Image 1 (spheres, rainbow, N blue to C red):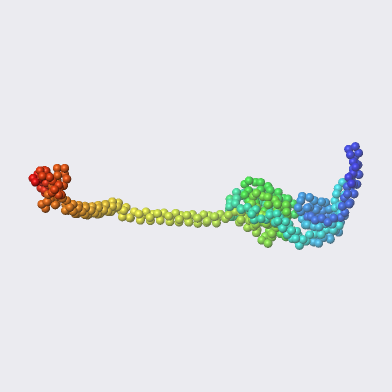
Image 2: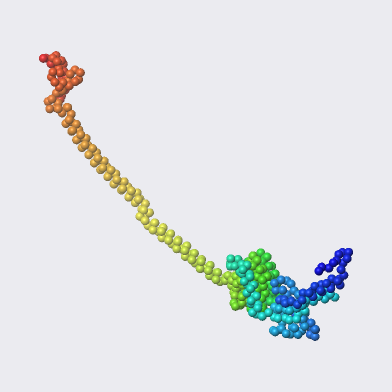
Length: 402
């Protein structure tokens, strides 16, 4: 129940403190899971102090326990280890502080960790964070390579030295962070966000050496996986060795089996590229030379053709053709004229044979009346009528006397 208070009738501090104490006492003992962020045990002290951090959020609680409770942990408890704690909340009104008194601490075993990782993997996969369609291709030659690694680590040297051996001019933007322990997730996530905001960084490599499953747990953190998923810059994961498989490998755009393999993936080999360019240049030169030789051969063939050796041969050949056609046309015309002349002679002969003049040539005559009518019957001409008589060689007039 809420306390009855007002500006005119405020509650005393002791009243509030005792109320909080009562609320906390009603919580009872609870089981909680987290990661040991800090462990303080002073020789001769009656209490051990622990800070238990949430693995998914930036929250922590203070715990105390008796030394015998800590000593009962097998293997011995160390910072960064994940544990399950049975504890009861305690509020101290005198100083207004809250802590939990741990009665039992159980380190989380490997089987339980793997089961939790598998469940987390299935959850993130169902959201599509591991979908291959989300992955971005790496640039052929990045301007700057962002590198997230441990401080002074072998993984950093492997990536930098191998990359510069392959491409001496490569530039790095390096962020050295904690890659193990309670600060690893927050520092790695912050470094990735920082590099993703640098315009010149074309690819980000997240790397660390090998280790146990517990050592690599920060790289399976859900928050870190979501940070990588939201990156606009391609991310290469190079965590541990070939057998190691944190969730970061699944969400990254490219997975490298080792830090050395990451260097091979992010920058090309200059020697190999020079060889490829040399091969391509040789192929291009051979193709160009082949085409030039083909065209020269074609020009040489054209140049030795008869028409180019003696251009007048084309005119001569055409002139001979024209002369031949002219002779053929003349012969054809002569034949046509001869046949036409024969036809005219034949027609003339037939006309002459059928002409009245031919009859007159045989001694006949044509007698015509004064009106021009031909006399066919003698009675048609009356006595004393003058008629016209045409013969072969002229004509004369005659008069019938009786």
